[in-house]
Image (cartoon, rainbow, N blue to C red; front, side, top):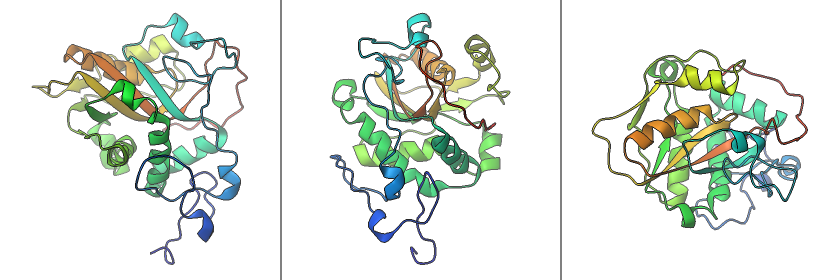
Length: 257
C-alpha cells in the first residue's frame, strides 16, 4: 500500500522518505504512527512552556500564569492543553484534513496530542474521551468528523475509552470567524445537547481540532456540567494566540471550515 499510496508529510504534504515514515519522537505511548518530513520535524510549532494554566495557549512572559482571555473571561471547562500553535503550516494542514479527506494525517496528529497529554493524564484522570460533535448534515457532507477520528486514535494510544454518541449538535451554526467571543457564545448557546439518560461521569476529556476563543468547548462543557460532570478537560490539535497577552500575531490565511 505504501508503494501505491506513499505516506505524505502532514504539514508540507510532500511524499515522505523511507527514513521519515516512522516517527523517532521519544514518548512513552505504544503504537507510534508515521511521522513528518525531516524539515518539518525540526520546526514543528509545538506549544511549550510557558503556557496558560487554563486553556493552554502559549505565553511570552514566564512569570505569567494565564493568558489575557482567561484572566477576563469565565470558562466552563477546568483546564486544557494543545499540541501545536496555529501557524500557517498548521492552518493549511487542518484545512486539508477537514475538506480534502486527508484522514491519513490523523495518526500523526493524534500521537502529538497524546504527547501533550502525557504529563496531564495522571492528574486529570479522565474516565472517558468525548469528541466535539458535528451536525449530522455537515457530517454527511464531509463524510466524517475529524474530532471523532482524533479521539478514537488518542483513546487507542492512552487506553481511555471513547464515547461518540453522548453529545449532538442540534442546529446548523452560522460561521463564527467574524464574531467576537460574546457573539460566538450567543451563537452557540443551546446548539449542543446531551443524550438522556447521560452516564455518570465525574471527569471527562474533550477532543477538538482547533481552539480559538474556546466558545465551542465552553458550550460543550456547560452542557456536561448540567449532566453532573464535575471535571471537564480538553486537548486540541492547535491553539491560537491570546489577543490580550501582548504576543505577536502572525499573518495567516483564513479558511471558512
